[in-house]
Image 1 (cartoon, rainbow, N blue to C red):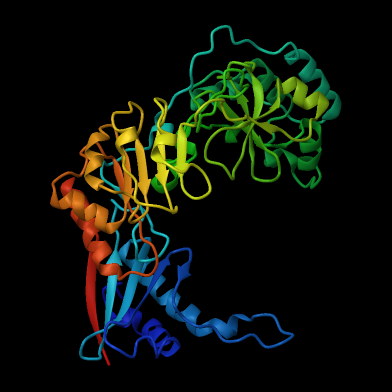
Image 2 (cartoon, helix red, strand yellow):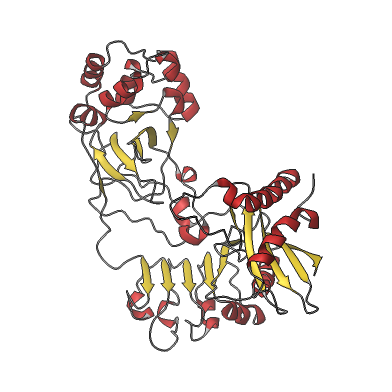
Length: 456
C-alpha cells in the first residue's frame, strides 16, 4: 500500500489537475491547492459538462473518483485522516507537489491548505466550553410536573409497551452519574423504547413517538449534554459567549451536567430534561438543543408531564440579555468604532471591513473580561497595542500584524489558540511558515510539508 509521501499515490490526481488548469500552471510560480480527507475531498479538477436532459452519472467523474480514492487509501494505510496539497510550477517549468500534513496542533482550514486555528495549549477549550451552570436558589419543579399522572397517561396510550425494571433504571443512573428525575423514571417504567422489544412491529416506534411527543431514545441511549458533547472549532467557538438574561428560563450554556437528553424532535434537535434551569425556569423542564447552534437551548415545556399531555408544537429560544453586548462586531454593518464596543463586560471583539482609517485598541486596553480579538488584515493602527490586552485566550490577525508581534517578541503568552486571517488569494507557503513560527513558540507539533518532484 503506497503512502501519501509517494509520488505514485498522487500521479493520477496530478494528471487531472494539470489537464484542468494548463494555462494557470503554464508559468513558473503558478499553483493550485486542494484537500482530501477520508470522508470527502476538494480538489481543483474541472468536471465534464453535463449532457442536457441527463443527470450527472458516476462514470462522468470516474477518473476523479479513482484519483481521490487512491489518496484516501494511502491515508488509511498511514493512519491519517486528511492531507492538504499544493501543485506548483517550478522555475525550470517542472511540477512540484507539496504534501501538507497539519498535525495534531492545527484545526482544519477553510481554504486548503490554509490552516484553521492553531492549538497552542493541548486540550484547551474556549471559555464558554468551560462555563458551568450558575446555581439558581429556590429552583423548583413546575406545578404541572406529576410523575404519577404522566405514567398513567402513557400506560393508556401504550398499553402493550415493555417498561424498564428498577434495576435497569439504576444501571442507567450509574452510567450517567446522575439520578434520573421522577418524571423520566416514570416514562421509562412504561417503555424502555428498545427496538429489540418491537420485533416485527414496524409501527411500534411511531406509536411511541406519537404518545410521548418526540422520537424517544431508549434507556440505553440517554446521555448528558455537557459542553464536551457539543464540540465546535476554536475559530467559531471563541466568538461565542454565555449570556443568561435575569428572567431566562434556560441558561445560555453550551451544555450542562444537568441536561439529560432523552429524545429528538425529528429534525436533529435534541430534547432534554433540564435540572439546571435559568432564573425564570423550573427544575425538570424540557428544553430543545438546536443542532444548528453551538450555544444555548430553547424551552419546550415546563415539565415532562406538560410535554406529554399537551404535546406542544415548537419551542422558543431565550432572548439576548439587555444592555451592552458581550460580543461586539466593529464593521460596516454594526458598530463603527472600538470605543463604541468598549464596556467592562466585553468578552469578544471582532473587527472587520469598514470605511476609514485603521483603528486603535486603546479604548479596550485593560478590560477585565476581553478574551477574544479577531481583526482582518490592515484593521489595526498599531498591532503592538495588543500587549495591553492581558487576558486574551484567542487572537486572530492578518499575516503582517502577526509579523509585527513576532518581530517584537510581543505575541501574548496568555493565548490558548490563534488564527491567521487570510483575505483574497495569497501564496500558501508563507502562511504555513508563519503558522509554524507561532506553534514553535509553544513547542507544539509543527505543520509538516513534503515536496515531491513530479517532473514535466
